[in-house]
Image (cartoon, rainbow over all chains, first blue to last red; front, side, top):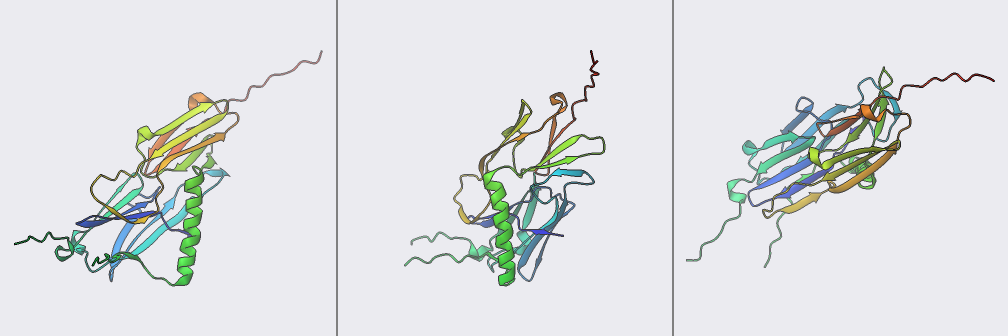
Length: 107
Length: 139
């Protein structure tokens, strides 16, 4: 099956990173996310045409999304959460306590 | 002295070939996304027409579909919905803004056009116009 690399934003905030990826056609049932040796991978097979007859085609209608990112040591793996809504995946990666910015009090 | 933050999330290294493939596909997707709204057109067993448009992360009220003189207009406004909290973009690939497309479809019954938005896919379905058969008498 043809692989498609989904367009992805990565945002950093003080306390977390958020991976936001466009996966139109992906559902909770088809999407999988796993972390193996600090590599986070998400993938989803998508079939948009069912058994319809194609009249005109500009994009692949049967393919697999796949993308991987290596996670830094500053991420709290137990706190990782993901949400899929309207074909957009958001994975929240909280920073570990020691990686969060600290305000230093002047004594 | 300023210490630059490390880029803590970096792409998995599959070697040059994989990066090459990534770039190829990304360029293709980017081309579709920036220039126009990509459309596939299908026909089902009954001869009904189905337009399929990938449109991830759109509010339903930001999708505008109109029909006039055999043309279907599709307008989509995509916002990235990021709150105002201080953020740094480590990677910024997803498209936002207004995307438009007009597609001409002959012999469509405009009263039958229906649209559905699910899982980031916009589906516009419609029936063909019933054929009008008229017998011409030779005088």
